[in-house]
Image (cartoon, rainbow, N blue to C red):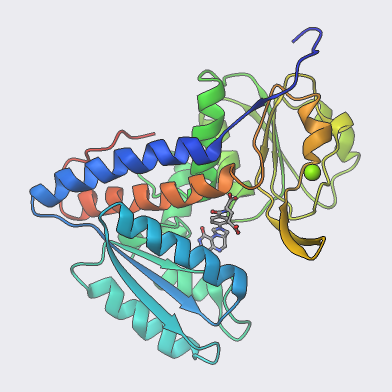
Length: 299
Ligand SMILES: Nc1nc(=O)c2c([nH]1)NC[C@@H]1CN(c3ccc(C(=O)N[C@@H](CCC(=O)O)C(=O)O)cc3)C=[N+]21
Ligand SMILES: [Mg+2]
């Protein structure tokens, strides 16, 4: 990419998400006129403060978009059996098109079991084994919201990704693994790095697209970044700064900004896109369940 002197372009996820929200609002209006109001059920178990904030934002955004929103707050002592029977009811509820069970769940509940109990057609998180399998095979899946949001931001910077080296730091089922599938589908050469990866800095320096999703504040330094690279920071780490809560990404923002070609901030990068993609998946699921053609474009 030659000599690189200018600061990275900031990828304004909040602005892109706002644009998506207004498209989604029109799409919902259109569906409502045709007699279909997509419904999203959000289930929160326990009172983790971060989870409560996320869930509140998801509900607020879905109401703004015109979706029907169903909110289930259960105590942290809820048994796995009770949660599974709520999911059964939501699976058969006709006006519920999407079901999201906020993670993490209390440790006495098996999250895999809960995820597998959700009707795959209503699995707007894309975590059910059926959707994971379909994503891997290449079509028809509900795709996890954070990786979908990352792809929309990356493709906003550069529409042709074929042949680029993509390095994902973090191998979670929620971000790293599904994002690897999406980047492969775009013909990137994908490497998924993790805590046992040798010489992570050198590996990162080869990345044209670098995604940080490890949950380690400012792990990725400016001198780990290839000049001109697209850097996507999925990290949301909470820290105290002068007595106030501050969000810090997995990337050293100031260091990266001097080297990268384009960079997402935290907050205001991937986070808002995650919520926009959740609403989009809900609309998608509603259209599929009711055999209605979707008014939103497919990615
Ligand atoms: N079943 C399930 N599905 C999820 O998609 C899911 C989940 N569980 N558990 C937790 C993670 C995390 N997540 C975020 C969503 C929005 C922001 C977001 O909007 N962030 C704002 C800042 C919000 C703040 O101030 O905390 C931003 O980055 O600008 C962040 C993180 C979804 N997750
Ligand atoms: Mg920083």
